[in-house]
Amino acid sequence: MKMPSVLKTRRAVYIALAAAVVALAIPVSFAVAGNGSVVTLPLQKNTENCGLGSDHKANGTVTFSRNKAGDLTVSVSIHGAAPSRDYEMWLYYAGPSCGYPLWDYIGKIKIDSGGNGGKTVTFSDTNGSNDFWVYAYDYTNSRPDESPVAHLANG
Image 1 (cartoon, rainbow, N blue to C red):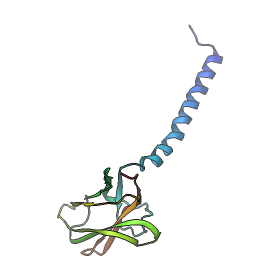
Image 2 (image 1 turned 135 degrees about the vertical axis):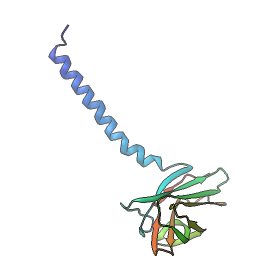
Image 3 (image 1 turned 45 degrees about the vertical axis):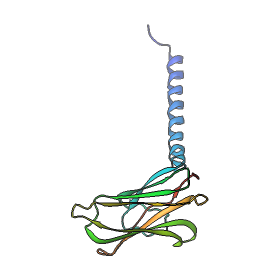
Image 4 (image 1 turned 90 degrees about the vertical axis):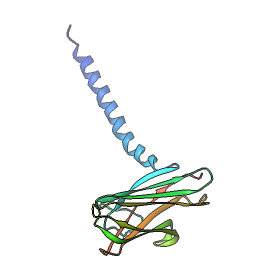
């Protein structure tokens, strides 16, 4: 039995409406994904933009994770970077001006010949401060990298 043209038209309208709802929901889900106790963001190559992000390629990830006690664990994982003997990282709170306030020093790592390296550090009692970003500098190759700002919920 053939479907009447009115039903075909209605079906096409419903399909288009469903597709529009899905298309509108995708950006909202990405905007909300950063809120919570765990956020993973790219570590962007050759970026020095005060945590505002860039369109540069990523050479790793930064995962921010806060527990119920308010301890913040920052894990930096680097892949595909230039080898370096002197790659240093800092944790910043997204404050009123660039580079302020510095929360703490994450540390110095080596990036091996395969371009891989990483470090995990935990900072205690970070409740009340919810927006963080990582700045890194490769002193061997004179190159900055950084993450966009991660927005975390209190523990």
